[in-house]
Length: 357
Image 1 (cartoon, rainbow, N blue to C red):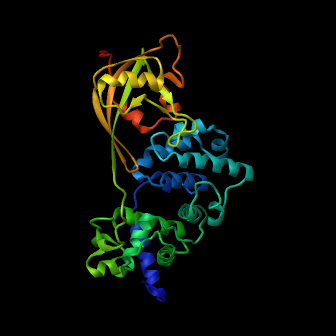
Image 2 (tube, one colour; image 1 turned 60 degrees about the vertical axis):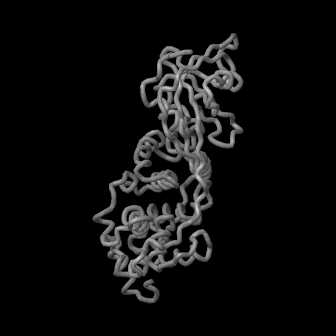
Image 3 (cartoon, rainbow, N blue to C red; image 1 turned 45 degrees about the horizontal axis):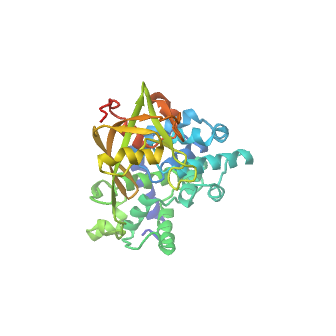
């Protein structure tokens, strides 16, 4: 595609940028050019849809407006501001990287320097450097992999190094040296909105004249579909115990393999209601009384699909005082705690009243 034809490359780049200038979504990070704000957006956008990130981006920057503020914060403060975005390793890596930058005294300027920071891979480094500092380099994310695979009608697996080199070469041909950051964002935008995995909108694509996949009549064949792991379905029960206007939460152990240190509602995976109180007693201590389930919510973590049943509950100390690793919090306190979106979903309706058995 376009190899050896400077005129075609220039026409394709111009068509792509003209389309982007008229069709790009109005996303908050596209109004910023400072490297710190671009960096935060790229970390948030890893494995997360743009429409989800929009709800968190400005609030996070208001809380941590610069690298120094982020570096000086505690991990709990950073995780609390990140709560609901998921993939919390990103937040921990962002925090660690901010501390490294604070020690170094300045932000990186080139992709190879960005790639040395925790949580910054090859794609993110190229995206940040091209958008913030104008480095002429292609950024190859999943959307760009799909666009470039279709341009050259490749069914090869982009996880293979040889395939990625081939696709990066195609993407590089589409990076306008005058506007490298916009070129990369245009390719990402094209993959997200036009060159979709299914039912691509080829009639609206600015690169259609150069697309071998479109010319084949079956662009969806490219790239070959990846084999996905089986979905695991999990049934879980969570319990909302209240004391006046406060909710009982427990903190996950620091050594937990998932969401270490996060605050969560007490839970079990024992579906039999007559066993729930004894399960809760063994797991959290105290004496529990459990009511009937008030509602069900759905929750997804990677390949796990949760059906979560919410129960009202009462916790009694049985002489042990405050619950171990637990505490009582008002709903307004949740903004300052590291909690998962499951807690917010379970508390989305008015907190269930007693209904104790």
